[in-house]
Image (cartoon, rainbow, N blue to C red):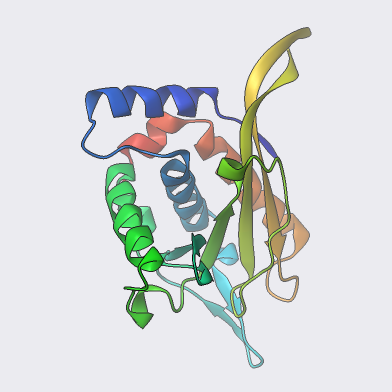
Length: 197
């Protein structure tokens, strides 16, 4: 699904100009939007086990981080209850320690949902592989100017393509689409993201 991120980029730019102590990234907003979407579509916040589908009560988002040793997924626990600025500070700390092999096992084991962002590498869209026993992973592509039609006229918008991979044993396609639609609403309403949590 394509997301118009012009408003999000403007909000990020303004926040970074006015509050330079923590430089917000697009990924910080993405984490917050995914967390709120999981809270609003809780049937996606699940894990597959051989005996049952386990429902998570907390919204713990694992985020793929590249390190010299390979990918690791540190977890922002309770991300739905945290501000975008708090997520920014926590992700910076987790990513720095991940690259230095300084994470404790509890900081990267578990999590109910994963985000993998290759936008900074210029990847437009991709499908990420689910981390079992999680049921979903969200792949984030690059935000780039593309032509769109608005009110019957050609315009240019900054679009970001996001692809949700789901384990259909726990989350079917329609439920995944419902989550993506909610995620899109939140990404395209950065004021909601900035004031929630």
